[in-house]
Length: 335
Image: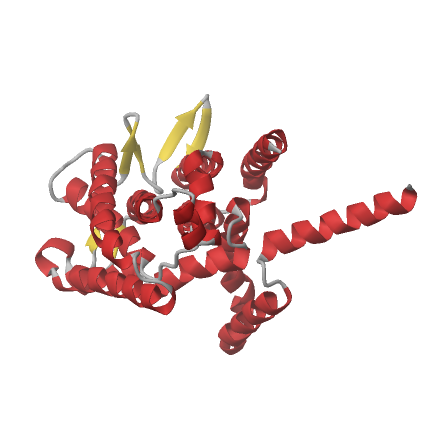
């Protein structure tokens, strides 16, 4: 069983890597690269959220708050105080992780609707703070964020760079960078899932009472995965801020939190590669439906509703199960 998992994990990473390598052949303008970069950053965020929701069975309706905190910390540290980008990103993630641990210990004792309301309240509080602290965050008007610096490069969407003798634009460089970040995020999540921590999280999701009986410290593991998912959100929020070059408190809003949780549910809770597909679909669907003008939102909601009715386990798990069933049926018929 372990060998089968290792093979599937490696195969998934290889397929994802190939897709990310081949994709630029279909990206014909800077807008396409910008959209692909946003998808990569958001996908990495929900890979972390999926550890909490899909594997530990804990809901979070305020996760955009941690995303926004990471974005603002990195923006303020680099823009106002002149910090280098990477230390700002890491320091922001550590601080957000500490905040997540502090608020997570009491609220993760709650279950069901009460936990949903508590995480929603955390997100609202963070959004209100970002809105009201005008002197620090710029308030509702937002604030500019400097370009990201990595390995001595100032990574700006508007720059031009030379890589292995090839001239690439800033949005192409950002796409490559965000693709590497996404692969690292997926690799870490897959290894965590297969570790003793991952097994403990799955036992918590199955039954907290049963997990406690066999000696699993459920409070400890729920807090740990809450912190890890918040750190994911903080790091990606910081990168998102540097890529966009300007941020407003909207990135910590309830709408962003709902976007994150919908990506997880639509792609398939408990499926690392599924939530990436969910991020792709939810970012691309509005672009596809833009031509329908006034009916765009109606059709968007209808598509999501029908998807969840006929594919309740999520896109990728349902499609994978259907393909596997067909292969088994075909193989059995030939036998």
